[in-house]
Image (cartoon, rainbow, N blue to C red):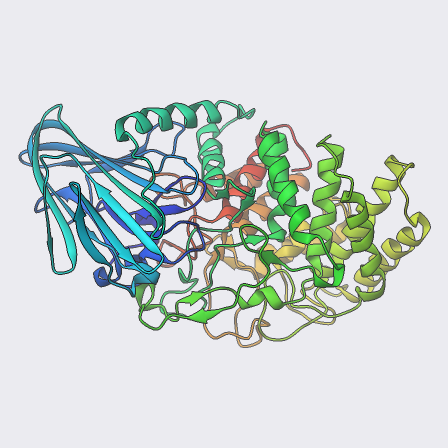
Length: 594
């Protein structure tokens, strides 16, 4: 059975594919991250679509694989009795015509290679009609059309509703395949030269990676995370998806399976910090502009997530024909959490826009007006209970982290006015709001007996999000209440040396059965908190253990199972990689605030 860490990512900043250790592309949505998958074996079986290229008779994993240095170009190699062959996978960038390029090269000997292509549109449910056209294979079903192109001498045939190719290559020879999508009602897009786009992709990725300003320890790990975040960016709008997958389970066989192919506001401040700190100002500005477009409108209608272009309706439904990864059902499309109230997003948006302004990003005429509307809405609504950062489905509560982020919203509004006195706003009123929220959180959200902040008012549960209290400057790192909270979370939410988000026992607030793994971004937050409170050796040791959880090509999922020693949750996860980069900056980049 495949493990989540068996996969590598390739993409073109419009969509992405997951390639397994066995050379099989088991997940690909076309033409966008949130489109229906044409390869959905990841969440089902071979009948749900995949594309494998490997030496004939090689059933198991490859001998080795790696990305070409500082790129998203993947090399997978097999050593066989007949010789050694390499498959290079990439998705070159071009507008509205995603291409999956697979180049096979014989490095030694003489090897027979087989390609098995099984296209199944709409998440593996629709078998297309496949025909020949000028030496190509064309698969069409409804709005979707894909073209398969290869070398003229490659023997290709159809059988069992699949397309097979077989060929023998000798040392130094290459064979390329190109799979191109386009709307079925439009003409086929211009053909690309697979060898030229391979060279161009390597060159462009390496040029982009050289812009990274970070030159501390673990630079290769930081750059790999940056490349992953770039690959999860929807280039036409600047939005960044939380992950390119849906329904990879937080517990094998469990029901905690969610669609993450959307853009969350919760990621905004940390993502902006990465871009602005490491020389990717253009990407940071594109993300800031996406944020402004998405949140424009009535502050009461602010959502926690949006579609790639800012779409607001992301209805959730289940697809019963997919059995789920490792039989973890249901498989969900869309995300019902879009309808939740999460007050923390107001603070995250205000913090992001304050950071962008302080960094000197170009201002937009309407930006301050939006900020004023958001903080003024909070003045009358901040006392509401909400579903909180973790999108619980067990009912609303007075979550402490949510209230802390309300304080952040007011604080950033006050700071912005103090730095920019020409702007208009109710400075006194916002100061009053900030002070009132602070008093209430310290009064109702703190357990003096245990010297720790709690998950919600009056509860005894803890929440790893409380580790952000010193980071957002709600209290200084040396405040005894901060130190007590860090120590309590570290002890009570420990899971194999890492952190859970919160307890998932019978008293859990999320309203779901079962448990989950250690949440990686929370563990990075712990490393940050330890560093800020002077425990730098412990912080670095934790960071090093977290880095070792990445798979063989440097990718992290959402969670980790310390018992089964495997990754869990959607993959690769933007939040985990953002956490890694920000922690590296805090520990090694001279940025003491993280």
